[in-house]
Length: 64
Image 1 (spheres, rainbow, N blue to C red):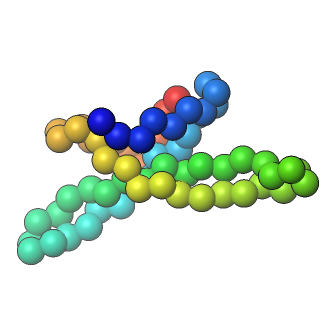
Image 2: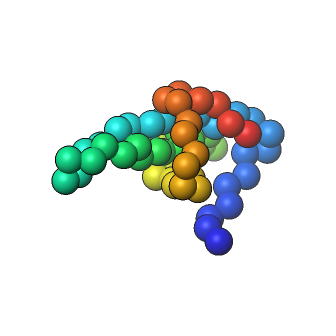
């Protein structure tokens, strides 16, 4: 069980970065999250995430 993020039906972009450790390359993923603050300015951030083993998501894929 993990953190559940709701996006009110808006797409979230998944960013993939391949990293190498001990000669093995593996993907790491983060979600690009953005929203407006009370003054109407955009606030952006990233949350690291993991998917089930064997799932392969291309870079900059939008999910809801």
